[in-house]
Length: 92
Figure 1: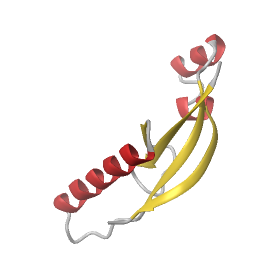
Figure 2: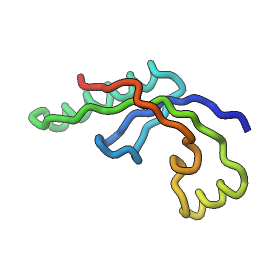
Figure 3: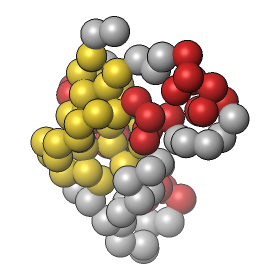
């Protein structure tokens, strides 16, 4: 199968296992900014850590990998993301 490039931001920094994925960097940044706005509205006095945005090379799983994911033997991120590179930080 062919690898694809997606972008992902940390939903709950610094946790790199909770990620939101988007097709483009712009979509990912917009979603991260919206998430930060909602967090600030919920707790304006809390300082929120920067959200990392990654460019991810993702491989669709084969049947055996899919079974491991469905049986919760591995996470989808561990099974499908073959490369991850930090490309931006969202701090606003």
